[in-house]
Length: 98
Image (tube, rainbow, N blue to C red):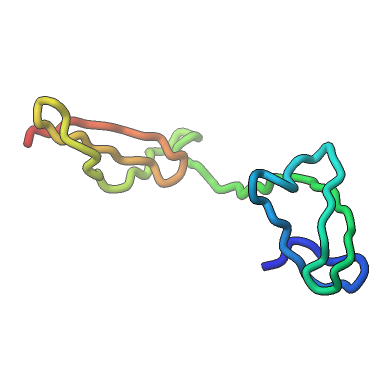
């Protein structure tokens, strides 16, 4: 998957993000095209995407909890378990004797 198109040859390039390069939004970044070898600059704009979904449990209905999952044994050799609501991600924990 490419990140950027060269403004000279229109070839697809990947921005090298080693050491955090190319992420800062407040500066001009320079790179060399992998295909034609010409240098060009680019600017970074970070955006966020959101995916809404219904959460009826936040509107008065019951939580839709998934199955209990074992996390670990505590110092009393009791099993610590967790489950989460599939809609709102509310978490419940319980301790079960081993």
